[in-house]
Amino acid sequence: MKIEDYLASLPQSIISGQDVQLPDNAFREIFRFAQLNKDDVFYHLGCGNGKGIIIAFEECGVKKVVGIDSDKEKISLAKKLLEGKKISNGVLHCEDILESDISDATVILFWFSDQNIIEKMVPKFSNLKQGCKIITIWGPLPGVLPDKVDFPYILNVVPFKKASSLQEQILAVFGTDCIDFVVAWEFAERYTRAIGSPDAGNDRFLTILQSLVIWINAKNLGVACGHEIPVPIKNYISLLRTYFNIDVEYLLNEDQV
Image (tube, rainbow, N blue to C red; front, side, top):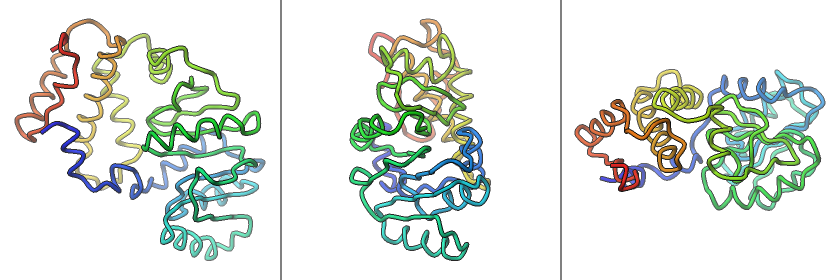
């Protein structure tokens, strides 16, 4: 099956990120990366059960924490968590982030995979106060050059720096002149480690998928190193086809196969 068919067979709440909860240590890494501190007003868009805003308050001492999620059950759980911790300067909203007032934010964590939502949020982010930090995971904001990267964490600061091309943006995210298999694997592994739970049993499978996606995208955009398909890429394409019945080779431009 094509990789799109494989992904379509998985629960959509997982694919969309709706039911993916970041590990506590990932939040700590993100907050160190963003240099979150007592002067910040921190917003977590898609806050889930509220663990992120608890850590932001307790360990970073932020001035105010705000969690927004459209899932009533998750917001209810987050409210119980805040009440149990006796956090008085924490606010939770059950609403669509596209309609939310985020104007007082100084740091925002925004991890969404829905491209429609992402594109609609960019103008909203652009109008925030100067110096506001937007943190994304894995993918940068469309058309924007990152101000700081510790992959898979990407930080953009208002006002945004526009990328002249997708190629420029990708190379800025990866911090290299071209992307080879080693870079693709290293960055895929970073992502898997960041979002995976300690007892996850499918980390290597996810890393293989992600590294193939990174390298194939780079090849199609003309920013891969060299003209030949690396042997490890060929081997992993074959492995997925043989043992998992997943086809990714069709993603390559026809003249590269």
